[in-house]
Image 1 (cartoon, one colour):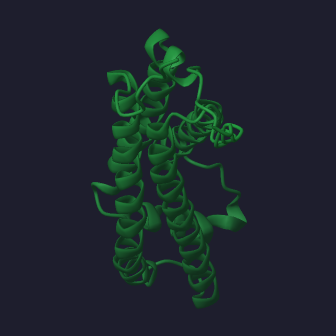
Image 2 (cartoon, one colour):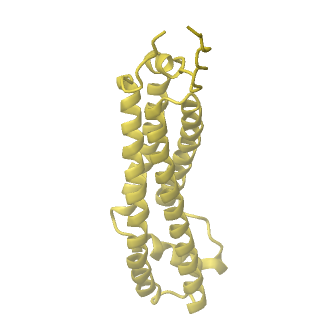
Image 3 (cartoon, one colour):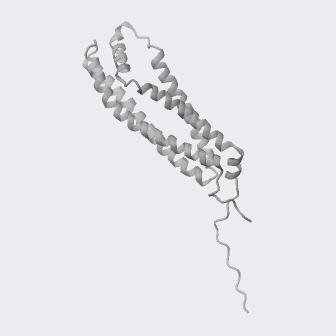
Length: 201
């Protein structure tokens, strides 16, 4: 009985693996960019916050909050990139559980991307209601929004959209009939056959 050659994987599987690898590279690059943007954003924010009614302690608290948010996001993005790179390699081997793992990750990735779009859209479109006694906090949030580079939030929106679309495309590719047949192919046994019994002449 002959078995399909793993090297002859369907084009849809190769495309899914390549897309996962591309998404992994984008995630790692975004993590690195976040750390570079953080330093410049904090410097601009501190300069702009000097003209507000906020106290130095409030400014420091806001800087700490932004630093934790961006560093945490960079770590998550880096881990996501490593995970996607691993999945890209696993899916090329045709292991039966690879598709299930990718579908689970894709579902979580789509959810995270939609949440990211909601947060970014809310930051740009809906001002937060602030009580009169919290005017200094409102001023700090306004200065913080202006401290980011002009291209940073549009980049985040674009990557979130690309993330959602990328996961959906990968899920569809791996659910196609050629991919299903290839992942369900029988695998040859790894056990060595017993040697034939010795037959005396």
